[in-house]
Image (cartoon, rainbow, N blue to C red):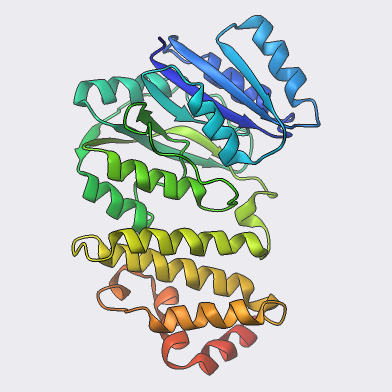
Length: 317
């Protein structure tokens, strides 16, 4: 049984998958299995994966028809045999010591989830000699959920987190959704946990691509972010120590969707009005202090003077 199962869903990632896989295979922690779930790729991705599998037998390849990243991750998790599981995107890379550090911290503190920092990269990562500090802190579940919902140290992606396999046995990625399905998976995993360990060292290299979902204009997939924001709020409603953070992420999700939807408001008239109504009906109590000035002005103008919001959007074109 390997220490870690690394799960990588792959769909038409031929330009990146070799670098991604090499960054995993070159980890200082060697006792791993690498489960590549090919989600119906029609480029050279699969050929590259089989080529690397001939060199390193730790790679396991599973083929399926194109069913989306959530299905691919779930299939990978079902086939994982490691004590711990990590989900990696097929166009990102890992620092060579990432898995060793996350695993060591998880074992040392008996944590259910081990988290590291993320380095966002807009160009090719440059080779560098790195000094590792790896100071870590043990945090409670409530603290981790607060950071997640405020968009602070616990990021919404599943990719910089090492999960104890037994902790997430009954937690799955919701299939059929395109945005924030990983955030909800992380949220549900935190609720199942007893202890989390966090290291600020930036060990996961997240490449910011121009064609990423979050960089695209508005489409119906953005409604998925509202669906998950509602789910999180409903699950935390009534928990006095966390409800305020759930309302914050709810308002930010709706406000962000409204801003993106605004140029297409005539196309989505019903949905546009529903988003406005949701913002107006959601309590602002204790939430504004967590917003920046632009966010606070935007949500307040929507709540109390929608004409002002529309005027400001017209002026800012």
